[in-house]
Image 1: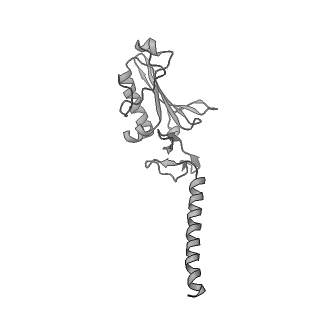
Image 2: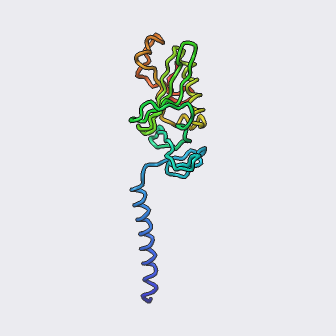
Length: 184
């Protein structure tokens, strides 16, 4: 056996271990997983291009598995209101009823992409269903995708006993069509 026949397998083994080492390093040092919604035509990395051809950061939502999901830029919708500029809190939905506001939906961009829905009407079954439909329409996602998101649905402590006769404050009621939600 000559030196050349021994060197080739050793070189191939070293190349194999080098490739495995590089892949392991990239896996260990990789940033958190970001899932891209198929409805959003944007490259991976939470960026998109608006109508003026500027690169903008797309909003992300936290999922129940603590990953981020990139969404379409619903913050540019006409009726979205910036509530707190420093904390980056937006009111992305609400609906008026005969006796006032039925619900409000808030997006916490500064908090990593959380969604909170406040139910403000005593007909909690109806109002929670309307809020779910409004959120699904705002985000333009399937019900399956909506149920994967981390969404907190509450009745504020200041109004819960007054509105419903029962204190539901402090309880995450969840979205009515999603598994694990509160059943009235």
